[in-house]
Length: 397
Image 1: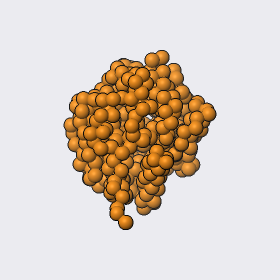
Image 2: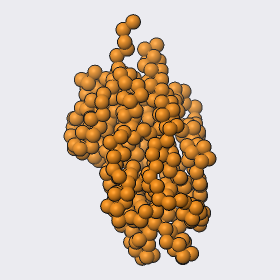
Image 3: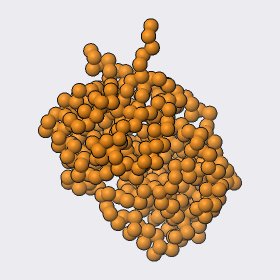
């Protein structure tokens, strides 16, 4: 019996500067597909001509990944282009320039992430809904941004897309906000398996590079309003008032496209409270430095107000890093109760949790990947591959 040819799946590039979690998700997916199910899927990445060459080269270096660069996918740079693409897909039924690129790339299936290619798209398609942030936190969206995102979701649902979610919590949100849909839905919980190359940096050298103390909490979230950095600063202020000098090292993109000036105003507040040595923002740092700081941290903090399935939490789980997390249903689901939790508005509870961890932590140490990681990653890969095959079978049936 002849071997089944790899399924050629189109992915559109997610620049790390715009959405680090989405970029890391796709990079990890490509890595684990190659490592745990080689020859099953060929990810074909469609990137814009303006996308970071070094970033694209890193993705292209993953065995099995193909890259196509085209101005058709320059949409990632501006919200305006995204609106144009969505309008074209809805009015004409297909984003014809993108569909032409997919045809030229001999694509079998399209993976839609934050872009709808039309109800007449001549390829099977999976729509990934990472979360329902615009419905859960509508006050963070302008009217146009809210409706652009909601219209995109509704168009994908109405077009019969198979919907991929990352958690049971997100499945509950889908049923609540978009009831009555008849789409196929799959919950595919992702697990991370960082490549050896990203673990080569020596954590204590990286700590020294950023002039950090040996004991610190780590907060690797983009500086967006819903990531809730403010609560961490409030908790640090409370701890300092109690006579405890605790350090939080933060990293990530400092630009919130929905609220320009957020980072600057927050850091001004840090200075006015005298917390410059307690809240240390390192900016956008290399990914191998992120892993190094995570592995050696006292604990990971994720105070986010909304998550679909947190990449940073998943990475902390991979190394057995202690976690202090906002009290979201998805955080409980993701950690199965194996973390400390606090309310998203409760700075005092966060301060208490940080102090307890700081006072009971042993000497600074560097953690390695846990042995149970392999099983979680294999389950993720199997679930993703099963989803793609089910979609292909239903399309041909």
